[in-house]
Amino acid sequence: MTGHIQASKLQTTFVEDPEIDLKTSEYKKNEMIPAVIADPYCRKILETTQLIPKSAMEINSETNIPISTVYRRIQTLCDTGLVETTGSISEDGKKFFLYRNKVKEISIKYSGSLEITLIPNRLE
Image 1 (cartoon, rainbow, N blue to C red):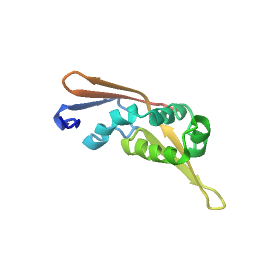
Image 2: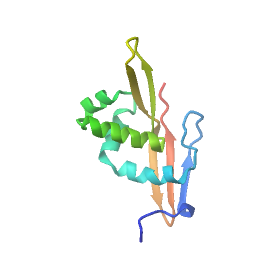
Image 3: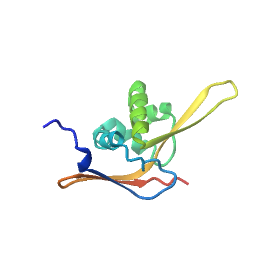
Image 4: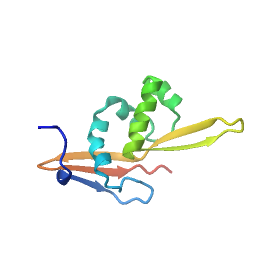
């Protein structure tokens, strides 16, 4: 057994939301979600960016996750579509990025096939 999920056995359910870019049924992206959710650093980043978008330094400060790990996990979360990046460039030319959790709830169920349900995070 290889530990990989067969594409025909993966079903992802998305609650309809025009702002969430999780409807792309790219198998690789969906396959990554269970592993991402199993990672404690990814879960902490999702938790801390649930209500308010935050910078990598704010995430580091609030979670005590090493800054290099914060950046790596943010990249993983962005790759899966669970976190989005917004940002701006200051007058002195510095880039400033904020990261926001795009999902309020993730449900993973296995009963012969893997089913992933994602509920969007609606920040006002």
